[in-house]
Length: 114
Image (cartoon, rainbow, N blue to C red; front, side, top):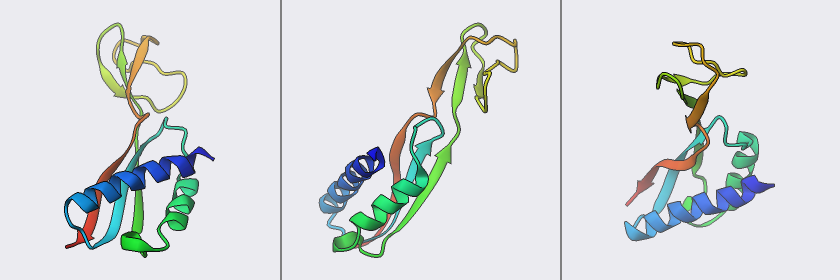
């Protein structure tokens, strides 16, 4: 399950930020996940719970925000939300596009106590 490895990396980022800023306890972690990231939110949540049983993240809450897939039309340059297939530009009706966001996964914010 690659969600476990992803969560391990995300939590390492959180721990590095906490250590750098002398954080004593993390209360909440907000993660943004692109719609096209091939990640199961339930599996991410499960991994988070399993990996935060002790330490400064014990009892922390996880909030997963889903970001839409965005595309740019190759023909007219319009940017639009790519909701489903086929992906067609709403301006010029072209089916030529490039995905510009929606594949990323990152820590958006951390709520903590000093």
